[in-house]
Image 1 (tube, rainbow, N blue to C red):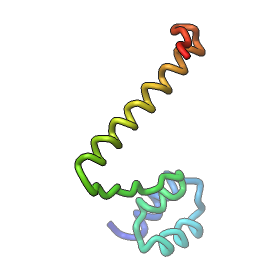
Image 2: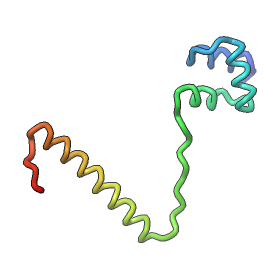
Image 3: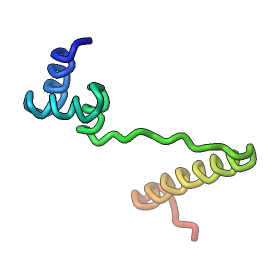
Image 4: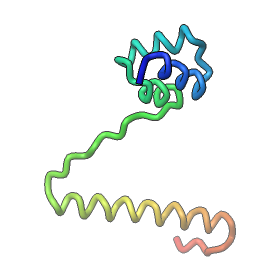
Length: 85
């Protein structure tokens, strides 16, 4: 993909003018996807290093418990569930 088409893509997906798009393309080493992600505020997700299977199991359990509690709180606020504690 040539630079002109990358600049066109950036200008269509963002509110950048051509000069801004060129500068951002230079800042991000000619990678138009990173320019668009930066504009939209999308950060790269860092992969968590798993040191043991037990830690991964408990991490997933905590994550699931947290999501269940958030859903429960929303249901209590709507009056669909009684507050237990």
